[in-house]
Length: 113
Image (cartoon, rainbow, N blue to C red):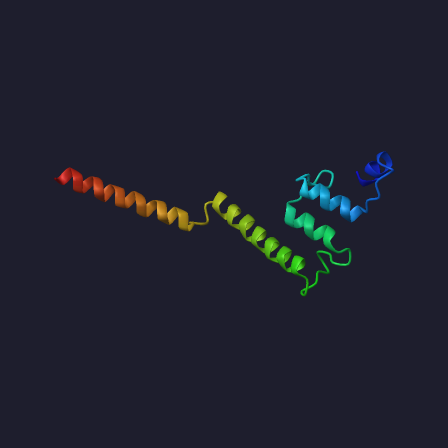
């Protein structure tokens, strides 16, 4: 897309980084063909070519942010798999059971009056 832009607008000098920044500000996202990435993963993949999934920097804020993001995503995927297989009762399930119990008690008290 950058090459297409520079070919069509030869009067504008625009680096690839500037092009991506402006496109991102316009809320247009880049995706890999056949594989959409979320904003954090995309930001990580373009922020520094020497930082990769196998070789990220502990001193880099974007790398640290991505590492936390990936960890949360993996936990979420595992939780969803457990919920689907019926092996996990979440706090929400417990909360709903308590609410249901309270409603039943309130209805019972109303019936007794």
